[in-house]
Length: 205
Image 1 (cartoon, rainbow, N blue to C red):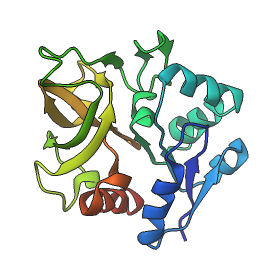
Image 2 (cartoon, one colour; image 1 turned 90 degrees about the vertical axis):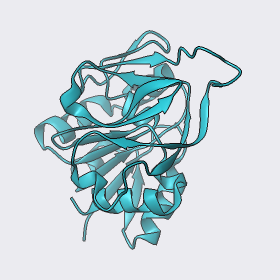
Image 3 (cartoon, rainbow, N blue to C red; image 1 turned 30 degrees about the vertical axis):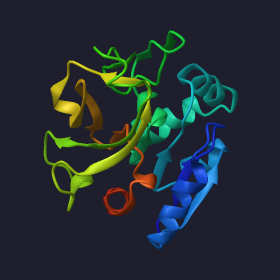
């Protein structure tokens, strides 16, 4: 049976992810012990909140080196959700903080043309647009709707890693993929059937 580790670094949203996995008959464990991460078959890095605080928490728990070992050396599949995806970038404007650097990308604040029409944070349901084929998108329709809550978004010139985009005043990157590394800006654990399908696809890699 697969060993799915949900990383607990004090940034919330853990139990809703675990509940959705349980609905998929998948056993998971919420972990903050670096040693337990090394034994995982799949890793989920969820989270909501501030980028700088997230990186500080990962460092304080001695998880940074372990995550790099798991993901870059052992090539364990990982799924970042919301702030978990953003942490995979090199840098964020939020707190002027360096990230994990797994993608040649930065995280920037929404610069909307009309703050009355396009309120920040971007909150609620919005469509995704598939930019390439991926096992993570199996059995998901193009323009599937997912739930978002974020004020910052991924920005990268490397189009090869872009899995989804979403429109909110302008087009932004809402999912990325590179080898065993996956990130989604939206919340599959809050996105009903389509979110459940995406998590199933990740587990079934």
